[in-house]
Length: 119
Image 1: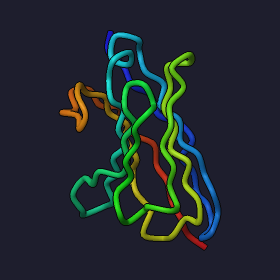
Image 2 (image 1 turned 45 degrees about the horizontal axis):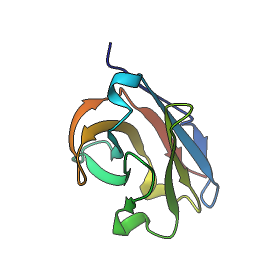
Image 3 (image 1 turned 120 degrees about the vertical axis):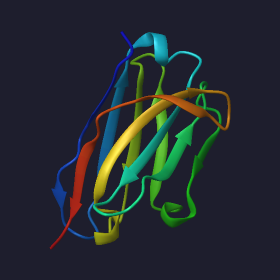
Image 4 (image 1 turned 180 degrees about the vertical axis):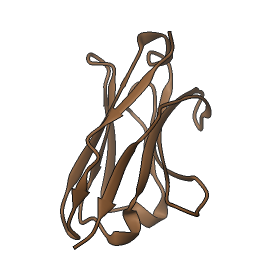
């Protein structure tokens, strides 16, 4: 069964750091690009970051560059999104996704984890 499960989302204050984790079933992890997306209320889903199947290539969108770091642990079949210096505008539901190729065409999606940045 293809499954992506995110965790780590919570309420934090501006300037805080938070790391999200996505654990994947092996059939949609090995050989797949892992990506992170977010969707704020009333807004469209936005691409945030991606890491290639080997972890050798990463990409983060301009709005979070310098603050967010994406990585993966192929032994644990997990991907991580380290978020630093969080801002209220980072508030959203964050989802991970997997897909073939680089850049990926994402085929599989998790349910998401909520991140709220508020004082």
